[in-house]
Length: 357
Image (tube, rainbow, N blue to C red; front, side, top):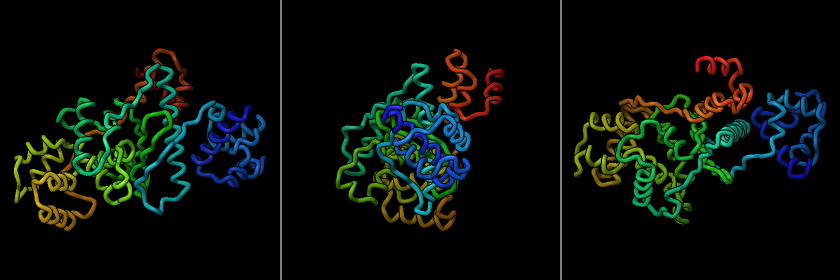
């Protein structure tokens, strides 16, 4: 192998090891010390090439096909922003990132096979965010450019993928909510944890993470982490619930009293939490700071910090990836075994899908 190929192989080997959650020592033990920990380190650093026999052992130990290691490309992550707890184990964090990298890679491969490569264009790349009004403006621009109008976004994940943003869904502990990733020469990637979370919170977290990825915050904002997080929260609220529509539904004038049923109706229609709605009403001057605080105290006292009344019964799911896979199968551009490799689905299940189709 050439130096560049060795480096790519090493990166792919390390990625597979992290997906498996193994240290170098643990991987060496798993292949019965066929190669040492030191040799594995040299493989990963692009300094050595394994023999065919060792490669087969590594593939088996890491539950990967040999083709995985021989691909001549590796997706690079440029910047990563997390919403996670500090006690998320490093191994788990690495495994999540590497699984997301593999998903992004497989998604990109099927797009290339079909000539359906999606390209993300950021409509607000020139807008510098200095405060809440700029965030509101960014959300307004995006709704216009993405043809969203003033209506609810019924399937946020599907909508984002239609404009070139990839969303990787995981089910994990509450130690992580989401991750936003800028991909070198590629579209943004969002990782979202959906385990034991209401849909409105999932939708909000996705957009919060996207705000980190493609809004251009001023240096002053970036130096104030608390304000930065509040503005990312506000962006999620603004995009989910257009200002014009909110004013229409709430009456368009200052309010001294709002019934819970009014807020539940807005929540159920737009898929946004009551807490986010009330905060937004404060920001646009419909209610006072004091009334907002009273609402927050009442919600926390009555329902707890993570619960609230009302329910959003929408659907958040990506269909595009599997649609591309099924299309490629129908057009005989990929084999059933290739489809199974790209999706991580058992080959027998792929055959069942094909038979049903």
